[in-house]
Length: 371
Image (tube, rainbow, N blue to C red; front, side, top):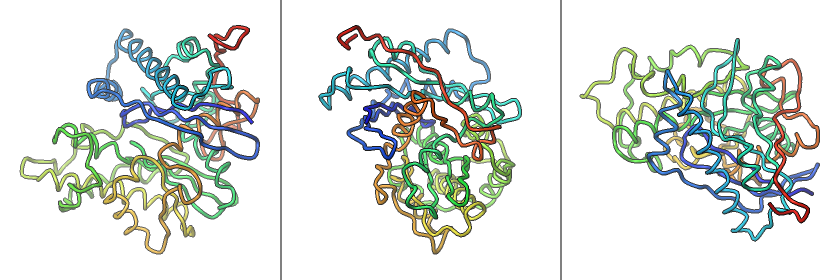
């Protein structure tokens, strides 16, 4: 058994997740987890960078260091919270924070969060930069969590797993495992709340539930070519952000109530996620949901309405805490790398084959195991 820590900063840019897990060849056990919230100005900074057409080298390096510092804070806080000595931890698997992601052809994916800084200031070996090896092999570099889903849900071979983060992704089990980004999850809903309403999110989807769908607008959004593209495919905030989405006809006008816009954005996420299930997993009778979107009760209600006859439940029902799925996944991917095992699924990403992912940055421990 190996103690490992996984770090994840998602496209919602709301904080750094850290999970302490115990991993073996046969399973994984969550010991404890936490999230270090980003201050509002920091979250806004990361979101602005994600959609900016131009970035200065200085800003990028500042952000790279800042994510690393939050990573170190999350690790140290988690170790203190659990009473774990850093010498007991085999590795940190750090996803970092996605600054840019472009699909193939000529794809790339850029995650910031300096792993050298993390290794130096925690004293623990850090495994990072997981996506670019898959891209070098012709893959999308995303999603990577379907391999972890297969590992933890092997006993439920006929289910699908829907991770609703800023961008949603779907894993489908069958004769082979398939997976892809379905499109927006929480990102557009949260962005509208923050820019138009001055709040972090639509708590439980209550505001959207009070509104009415703007049908013409929804139909325009649903016509986006990403939704009809066939997997393997991946996307990010570069494609799905309010500035890009609102630049359609009929445009959003002052006459549209905020609740109606939220209802329409929520319906866009719910319907595209459901359409993905119906297209790629038409025979599934169970969808396990994880990620922050699970807390949006109205979003889940609308998703259920579009997949009648399908059981829609939290991954908790299958033994995995829905809040920490991705952090756990990157701890596991780091463990795979350190054991010279492949981490991607080429049938998911479209890579030429399965590859050992990421780079290894040794920790700064002395002979006594301390920094």
